[in-house]
Image (cartoon, rainbow, N blue to C red; front, side):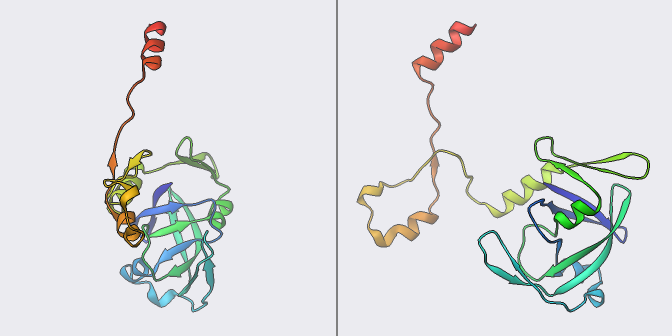
Length: 183
């Protein structure tokens, strides 16, 4: 789920809300652009992803982030790497504001002093991030352009990166007759 938040009156876009992450992460490039590099505390850590590859952090920084009028001091691990998002809010932030995330409804809700605050996911931002990083769409039914039976094993890598053609399934007679019966 992608949202945005305010930091020093600057809107930080493309923030991934990830209940599966054990850390809040922010890109070093975002810290540099905000002029906050001098506030990074040099405490390198190793963060492991889902495939157990390690990424060494450049330190950590505590920032007052504003989500829908609620300001929360949040500790981020600083990463100097290519990520699709500018920041990631994981379980530490989610638990600190007592938030409930709903991927089904695409909202995040958390209690404040007087009301329950609702943040709506920025679906256009998620689609934009996906479109920028994936040149070929990923449909569920894909068939390669060339016949796999005549392919040499050394061509496997080239075929893996080759564009695919999507062929939509045709309606069967059973489907058409069932639809007609329902009408």
